[in-house]
Length: 136
Image 1 (tube, rainbow, N blue to C red):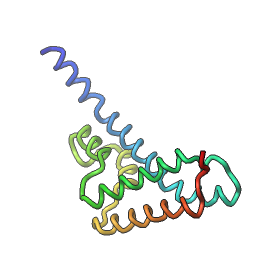
Image 2: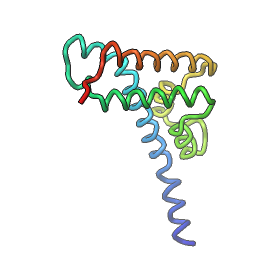
Image 3: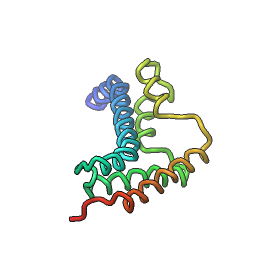
Image 4: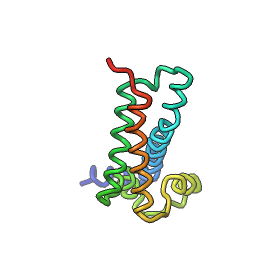
């Protein structure tokens, strides 16, 4: 019983920090997805090699597909759920967290996100044909 109490106290003590770490991971994934929308065409123009990686491009396609699917079926992103559970609230009092959350979480109707994510998924698939990855 004492071990459970110690674990529970440690989790409560580190939960805000873990929630911020999850939020930062979330932002990294968002930047990765959005960044490749622009970097792949630019990379082809300047003949870069890294953006031609089939693994990288497939990972990008999977991520935007997951985001679109989550929105289509109306489920929350698992990272958002984890962050909210770690915080125990839906609003953080930390200035940094508030700024980061404003960047990640927009207040628009679901249909706006569905259209935006569908357009992004379409662009990602189209890039496979316009700017094909290097096949092994």
